[in-house]
Structure formats: C-alpha cells, structure tokens
Amino acid sequence: MTSRLAATRSWAHTHNGKKLIRFALTSVISTLFSEGVILVVYGLTLTHSPMWATAIGNLSAMPPAYYLTRRWAWGKSGASHWRKEVVPFTVLNLLGLAVALLGATYCRHIVYTHHLTHLVNTVLVAGVNLVSFAVFWVFKILLFNKIFHTTPIALYEEHLTLEEQA
Image (cartoon, rainbow, N blue to C red; front, side, top):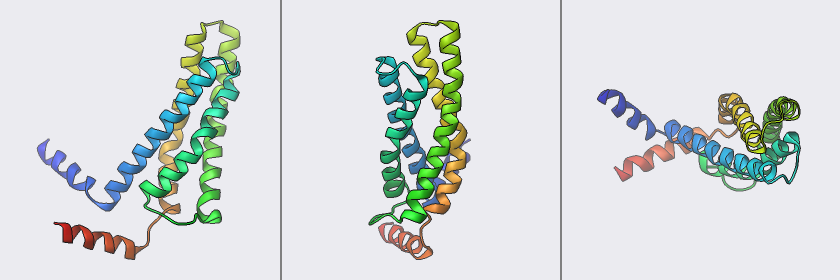
C-alpha cells in the first residue's frame, strides 16, 4: 500500500497529474456552483420547473468552468481561440445540458405524479443533475485534454523549471 501511495504522490507531481487534478477540482467547483444555483432557483421556488432550474444552474456554471479549465487546469492565458477552444467547450457543455435536461424531464414526471414534498423534489432535481454531470465528466476530460493541449516546448520548459527548483 505504501508503494502505491508513493507512486500516486509521484504521479501527482507530474505535468499530466497536476493537470488532471486541476481539471477534477475545476469540475468539482463548477458542479458545486451549478448545484447551488439549482438548489436556490428550485428550492426557493423561483421556478416551479425542474427543466428551467436545471438549465439555469448549468448555464450559469459554464463561464466560470471555462475560465477555470482554460486558465488553471490547462495553463492557457491570453485571448481565447473561438474555433478551437470556445466553440468546442460550449458545444460539449450544451450536450451535457441536454443530458441533464433529459434527467430533468424524468424529474418533472416524478414531481408532478408522485406529489412528494418540495424538499424531496429539490433533492431529486439536484441529484439527477449531479448524475448527469458524472456521466459526461470522463468524456469531457478526454476531449478537453485534446482541445487545451500545451505545446511540447511548454512541457519541456516546465520540466526544466521543476529541475531548477529541486
């Protein structure tokens, strides 16, 4: 077990390890943001529709998710490239929203037919959104890794910087 832990720690200090950890943390942050918005919008009955709550929650999380993914996880700065970065990110997130809206459709059916308490309905809507996000997470990380890839020179420079610090 100790060698596995040491190997994991060693991997976490590599370029790909750091990138994956940062992407995972970015996903956690954007998911918490989205879930928080859904809980507020649906929980406080700003809308009675699970569909609208899901759409508002997921759309409101897109800008911070893009910024964190681009800037922190992949280390990009400067102007975004619309065709290579913004459009693919937006399309993938809209696909994720479509999956979440399918789940919200199911939630709407349960909410309107089972007459559960509003608290249970709110937890159900947020929970289905969370499951929908999990379905898309692995797919998105693989694709975003291709979109926001760094050049080999940047990787080499980072390696040299780490060697100088050691």
